[in-house]
Image (cartoon, rainbow, N blue to C red; front, side):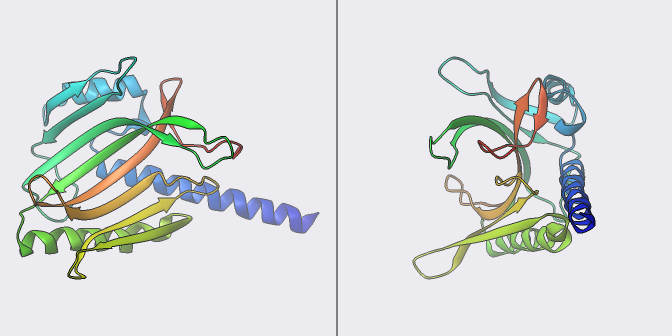
Length: 209
């Protein structure tokens, strides 16, 4: 029984540590933090933020999801200076990997540091990608890595997903890559969450808790 209690305490402590890491990362990179307020207040704060200019906003309807995008001035949490710092709030549907293939609606809060389309721009976003991983990977329960290569076998994008135990869906995803429309390079950090009772919460797979 003592061993069981010790293991239980260790697991609780580890899970709490990972959850603290998530809050730390979201607060560090996002100027307005949805974990610290009601989600409706978060959206209202974006509209009132003098450093943020909204370029487009589509309200949720019966046939479409919520979407907002805009750019910052006088704000930059990254270690390089991007040509454009863009924020995207996008609702989307995901299909869980359970036996019923349950559909769910989540929100992506995405910050993009967009640089030039040249070699220097690529190096800047790659460096920020590596810096984030070196500084924050150990804060989370685990992480997974993927990369994508061109026909010439050059790496054109990399992705890390960071998990918080015991949840199976990563709330934080970082990536660098080239934007198909402009051919500019971007480092992107995405916070993925659900909204329940007007609060941002973890994405929980069916039967997980």
